[in-house]
Image (cartoon, rainbow, N blue to C red; front, side, top):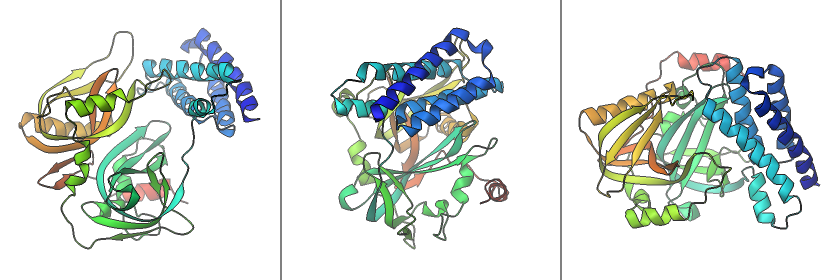
Length: 374
C-alpha cells in the first residue's frame, strides 16, 4: 500500500517540478510555495523522508526568492529542483522492484530510537546551524567513553524554528530541560547520562521523557581524552581506504560529510575568498589551506555568513600569527571531489576550545524566553 501511495504522489510531484522548471523563477508566486508545502506533507505522511527533505529545502529557497532575501542561492535552488525531480521520477521505475533494501534506501528513514541506560560522555565538538526561514541551532558532538558505544561520536541536535536572525550560541546558555544545568555546563567536563534515547544508525542521542533522562556532571574539570580520537588520525593509505568505501549517488548533496578526522600539528598557511561565480548568485567562500604532517591536501571551506563569522575570525588569527594547532578535530567533507575539514574543536595541551562558539550577550536569554514561551 505504501508503494502505491508513494508512486501516486511522486508522479504528481514530478509533473509539478517540470512545470516550475518550464515557467522559470519570474513566474514564482506564493501559490507555488503552498503547493510545495502540500507535497512535503504528503511525502512525509507516506514516509518518503528523502523526498520530503529535498522538498523542504526547495520550499525554503522559494520563500527566500519571494522575500528577495540575500540568502537565496540560484545554484542551490536548481540543485533541489533537480533533486526533487530525480527522486520523484525514480519511484516510477522502482514500483515493481524486488530490491527492498534499495527501495528503502531511496525513500530514506526517520531515526529509530531506543533506550540506552548509561553513557559516559565528553563534549568533543560544536557546530552552529542557521537555515534562514527554517531552523537555527547547534549540534553537539560527544565522545562515548564506555560500553558498546565506546569511541563513537554521538550527536545531540538542539534546534529551534527560525524567527528572524538569532545567534545559535544563545541556546548553549539555556537550561537542559529538567536537569538544572545549562548546555554550557557540559564544557570541559566528563559526565554520565542515564536513560537517553539513542539511534544507533544515525548516532543520535536525545533526552527521554518517560523514563526521564538524567545527567550527572563530574565536579571538576579534567583533561580532554585525546586518545579516544586517535582512530580518526588518518595517514594517506587509511584516508584513501576510507574514501574508497564512501558511496556517492546523484541524489546526494555536492558537499557530503562522511566521517570525522583528527589532524595533528597543522598550520594554516594561506587563505583566499572564492567570490561569486558568473551568473550564479552565491555566498563567497573562505578557503584555508592547511599544512600538516600527514601530507595529503586538506582545506577548510566556510561560507561567508553570519553563523560562521566567529569561526572565520579565529582561523584568520591562527593564520596571521602562524600559530601551530596541535590537534584539530572536525567533520571530514568531500566537496566536488575535494577533501576538506569542518572544524568542531581545537585541542591544545589536552585542553579543548570550541572555536565556532562566540560570546553571548546577556540579554539574549530574555529574548529567547520571549520568543519561545510555552
